[in-house]
Length: 285
Image 1 (cartoon, rainbow, N blue to C red):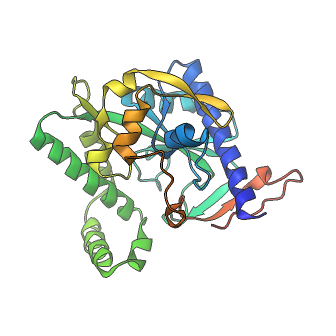
Image 2: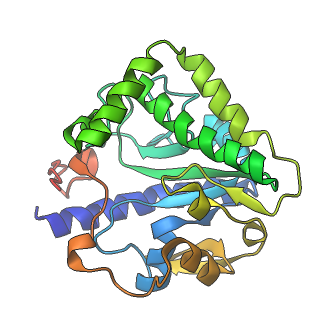
C-alpha cells in the first residue's frame, strides 16, 4: 500500500472514531466542535487536509468531563477512551478516543501506553482577565505539560535536535526526577480549571501552540453551526473565519510543499481494518 492509499485509510478510520464522538455527544446533548487543522481542512478542503493525518475536536470543560464519564458505559466495543486518568502511561491534559485492534508509533511516543489510531479531544478552560494571572497560567501550562511528559519518558527524540534543545531537555529531565508524578498532574489540572466559573473573555485549550494563539474568544464556543467534513457534518464555530485567521493568518493560502507535514507517524498498523482480506499493511511516513 503506497503512502497516499495508507493516508486515505487512516483518514477513513479517524472519521469512524469522530462519528462515535458525534454519536455520544448528540445522544447526551454535549457540546463539541472541530478545531485546529481539522476545522481548517473542513473550510479549505471540505474534509481532511490532504497531507495531514489527524483529527482534533474541542469541548467546553463541563462537556469534556461529562463525555469522559459517559464513555465508561456508552462507548461501542471497538473504541477506547484514553486520558491521564485511565492510562497511567499517558501524561497529557487532553484525551484521545482510540480504535481497538490498531496501532500507531509516533516519534513522540513511548512503549506501554495504549496506541491505537485516534482522534484528539481538547478541553477548553477559562483564561483570567488579569495580566499577571494570565502570565502565571501560561507559564504553568507551558512548564507543566513538558514536565509531565518528560516524567513518563516522552520527548526523548528532542535529544536528537539542536544542542540548545538537548541542553534544556537534560536540565529538565534531571529536575523532574525529584518531582512526584501525582503532584505534577494535580498541579497541572488545578491550574487549568482554577478560573472556570468566571465570565472571562477568553478560553484556552492545552494544545501545542503558544498561549497567545491558543487563547480564543469565549463567545466563539457559544455560537456553533454544522459544517461539511468528508461527506459528514460536524459542529464548528460560526465565527470560524475569525478563529482560523487568529490561529493561521491567511489560512486559505496553501503552504509550500516543503511545509506540508502531518504528525511524525513512524508506523501505523491498521489491524482488522487493513483491507478486505483482513491484512494489516504498514503506513510508513
